[in-house]
Image (cartoon, rainbow, N blue to C red; front, side, top):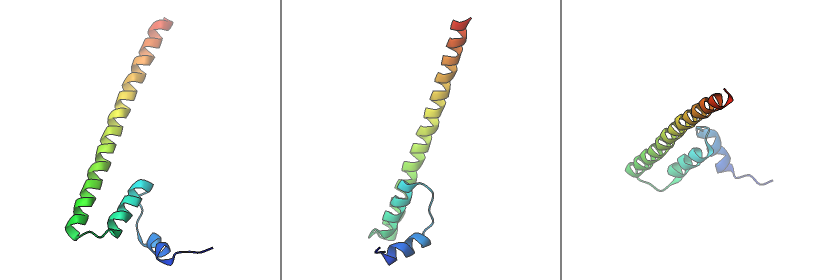
Length: 80
């Protein structure tokens, strides 16, 4: 078994957020040949992307709950 020592060391040093995609993107930003300003810009883009996805997920969940309420109300009416 061949192990890549820098990768192993890097995996112990970095803090994971628990989402593989985000962790990979953070790693790419860190390893990228970016200036300090460019890194900040990349982090901001990532934050915007994640926050937009969270907002969409919350909105979708609200819509699903509303549809479930409507279905429950309709099944109560039809069983009466």
